[in-house]
Image 1: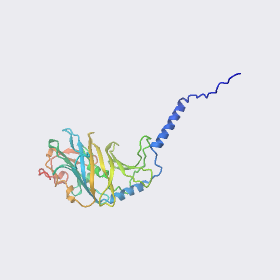
Image 2: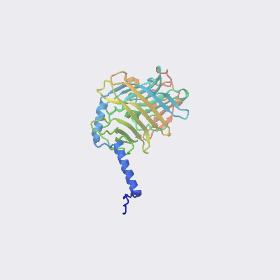
Image 3: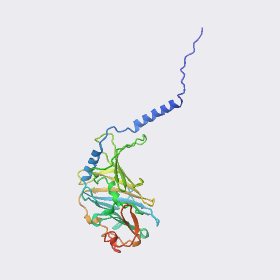
Image 4: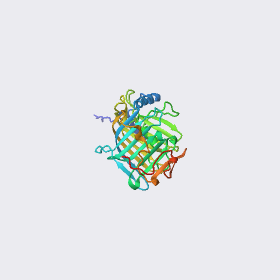
Length: 337
């Protein structure tokens, strides 16, 4: 009697094409499970309108702030402040809007006790935007005209005040724009998806990244702002998080954790980090708090730079002749307390 051997099933190798298909299927499963792609989409005009509704609720702002700044320079870096959870508030942010279109009045102030160490601001009454900080022989000041606000990228100006307000999430966007795109990050390993609003300017463009949630009813907060120059180089990148409600602003919200990197014409990156708290739209300061001439400390003339010109800006070292910028900046004064 012959005993039959049990039959076995032979598994032939899949080969390169079969293996590739298998890995592709695995990646799709991982992507579908870990990074679902939003299906519902809001149209860009609605996205902008919703953003502007929130922004319009905040005609003015007062906020405490933890400020941390690093400014690299040839004469030595200026590093000051901290946003650590253990650090105390060391500054204030004050904003006064001038209608929806602006330009607006604002100032970010850094202090040590009663003494002001740092100011970044815009004063429409003086037609000025400015930055100054006190650090002994490392002190510096930069002043420019708002009517040339398309020109402050030149020289070694560490911060661009005219770009700062776009990262707060509470300044209205224009009702129309020549270039608006919707874009989504399709990297399967990246869990966030964005709407990207692109606006073009004579000096470059701005991209604003709004969160793209799974459901239309969910919030679409602004998460990132990137400014590009004419050569399409990213000259400012801001990341925004921890949205909180502003008091006395009908439920309006804004980011309270903000980090900003500015890349100057000299290639150096200046960093500003903010942790905001106690935000309110109630009047808590006079508009005069934003002025330059009334708060300019005694900084040596050779450390004061004026951003001048039109088209492409340039930073030049000149004396403190007010006629250069139409601002009454004194050559010497006591430090404003």
